[in-house]
Length: 526
Image (cartoon, rainbow, N blue to C red; front, top):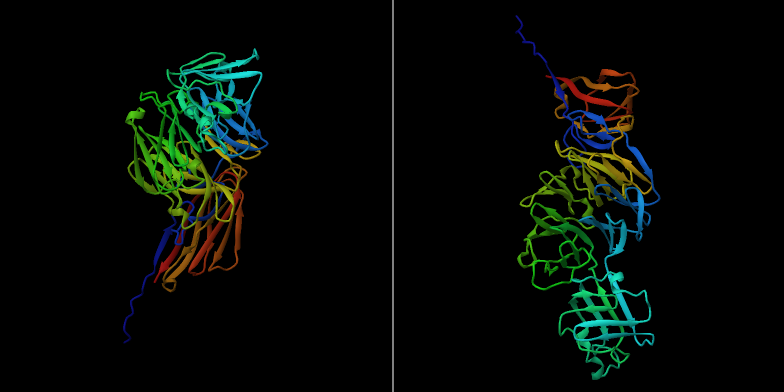
């Protein structure tokens, strides 16, 4: 009698792939994307298409976008507020900040007054070339008087104000070639001093401020009287002051006066300046809670206090904001989102959290970002010079690449996310979903393939009207095989017969509103 052999039953297993977002790392999880175009994470855990964008306006060379009660932006060299040209600026990169009802613009050092609808320079300059025969400049111990026959001349109309920090320069100091000892008797008149009163032709200062003189070519060449503003490369508003940095020095204006910095009288309304000893350039500044942050690539200076006498600056080594990523800072509920040299971070004032694992070792530059409360929109350039628009979902942590649009500026106006290219101003959401899209999944890998018998690969998808989806498969790096296209609206379950393989790749493309709800592998183990 032959021995009885017990029949071995196969166990059928259905394994569902969990969808993730973009993942460019060396060992990406299953269900993540190696490439995406025009997808949305708002229907997570399903893959879906983003909304159409809506064109708002055509531009000639859009470069800056902001919102304060109304949209303001730069197109070419025109500055717009409420969609009207309000002034002219130079071409190139801009830094702007809002203080009161004014928008300050750097490096132009201009100020647009919203209430008065005027564009004025932040700085004021008066120069007196020596010698002159038709005008005289007289210094007494506390006044400067300009004697001129010009009936239209006025220090007041030029923009000088009582309380301004004024720089006076031009008297020989002895460093000039051929200067004699007598020529430098009035060098002490070169100084920064607070202006007390302004009349049309007379500036009044505190007593015993100057050595009395009527300048001639023997004591100077060109006498200048100026209210100057630092050449700030980053700017922001904090506690009604304009803050910024030039070189390794942090500056703050007088309260409510973004054009008045160099006033140091030991009172609470003084300006403020402090040089820091840390290496590297400042890359960004931003308010966080009750403090002000000045970032470098390798750390952050935090400023506390309410007046110059109590301002305190600390330094914290940590991943800071990368060069040319100053506009990547955007405020979220749990901290500041920004891009460092390694990738994206969130900093809450205490801890710095890296959220760029999906980037792998890839590096990005020229980063700008803005958020609408749910999605952070990020425009950046990859290592090969390709610029694209990406999104990061604050609720589920999903990264997606939308497309290769060359976005120059981003802004949230309280209702919608606005995107600016050089030639268009767009709304990120247009209400429709009829967009061409692509989804290329990272490889699905198998182990112990000789102990499995494959059944089917199930794909469940839902299509809306006028939408379609095409599916392609590649096994073990073989050529792509077209598995068909679905065009009918409704819910569909697509079965694919897959032979055993170690590496399975799926590529989906289509157009219109869809939901990719499930990918499942069915096999038996023996």
